[in-house]
Length: 358
Ligand code: F3S
Image (tube, rainbow, N blue to C red; front, side):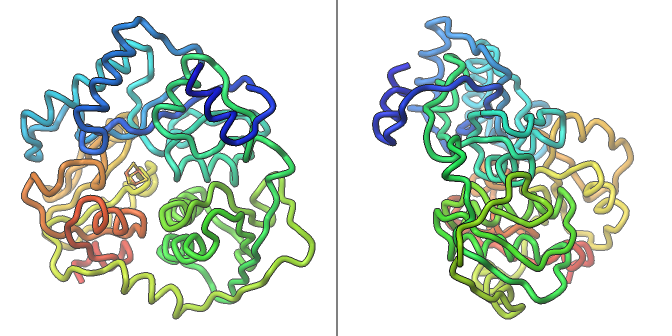
């Protein structure tokens, strides 16, 4: 309660409001370390329990098959302690960053406290739920108290598009991730309005939002015919996006040449995405596909160079310690964090190019 009230004071919230669900990040031992592990075990020992439906973000490894991809044992032991502390508090060990594709779909207009930035932006912009970009500890506090401070994107008056981007070319799958990254970088923490996209699937919007939330502090975007509470300021500043802008993003996020492993699933892959990947693999390079347990279970027969990993991703797994020096990815978000968090090289290409081994 002290954490929530302190946040409310910082952001001038008038009150706390009830929430319907939480999605808690800061699960990987790679990102929270010993201090985070002790913090969670402390809370768990005090017998705290969540009072709303609460799901975990990805951990640092596949919770069952971690030894098959070379995760160090010491890392695995500490990761399993983190999961235990959270499950003892009754947080669902869903370990996915796309919970809305496996059953946690908030109601439009409902208040939630989610912390994975790609899930936050999706919930606000595509589903119409209301959440700020929570940190792991604040989302867990909200899970235990059932409330969050009423500020930012919980207030209708702050959910207004401020900066307009016009796209005048046809956007294909891979473009969505690059476009999100480009727009996020310019928008910083403003709400961008994106015009010129006629149609987009949830997978494409997922890729767009992840890119925008990774390069900027964007928590919400507005797209006509997609965002439920579409509202924009009068005469917003207007910017055009060209194909060249996207090529520049791709160049910037590709500092490697020859990936040791090709990765998909940032954010976590849907069933349809995995189906496409496994049916179109041409390369013999190792491929990791990151997804949830529920979706992983559905794939029994896959090419021999493909591993489907649940509960984790190429960013929060200890890839450097596993001897990987360069990853291939179709996600601007994973390329960004591969360079900046994992400190290894990345090659950012379209799914089709990666599958061909180009
Ligand atoms: Fe999800 Fe990991 Fe990307 S948590 S959004 S796959 S960095």
